[in-house]
Image (cartoon, rainbow, N blue to C red):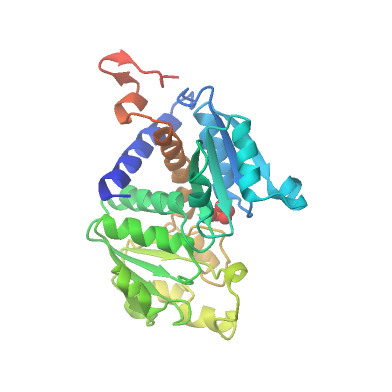
Length: 311
Ligand code: CP
């Protein structure tokens, strides 16, 4: 996505957030459309957020659970998806352990395919909701120093954040164990450091990532205890940061590992606001994928007449 396209999603999300503050939070933008949540990997936030987003847009929503499906009987992802399309699915939201799975489906489906996280590759709506949260709290993204701390190598959240942040003009620093933050990320335009003090002392935003044990094929550092002592965000380390630094985490959190419990629950933490913003961002994505026109339509008037989105 270009910077302009990202900004369109963020502006559209802002309009949907305003709709979320109304007494009636539903708009008929996706009335008559069928949205299928095809989650082949576990999820709490993303799945529920997409489900609620589709419901707020008045779509019919089906939640597909891999464990209770014919995928367990050997059916391929391609056949499963084609069967869902045969049931007139308009939008298929896919989370999958294999990088590229959403792109693969998009090549032969007529339905729109939305990536809800594919392996260690990308998690686009998480990247978008993170930049939305930064813009909302700081008033801008350009020129901010954003540090992403933790397991970068196996993180789809990191990759989607890096793309979005750099396109919007932020300075991105990556920090963590050298095995999890290879210098190859410098080629994307990020600064890489293994010195946590250097990484956090001038940061406007610190986005923490958990260790993605489920994707690591070998032990990448000696122990969790050693990771926490070298890279965990403790109260002592928070004292090295600038006042007003924003603490972010995509979840799920491993309290006491990458972040002290007290910091996760502090006023500087916007972890739960990220979740709230995720709903508006996912409404925006579904609306735009379905051919939505823009913020004026969402806010209730188009050319002076009442919009089809007015509750
Ligand atoms: N942030 C995120 O993707 O969380 P879930 O795995 O719970 O969806």
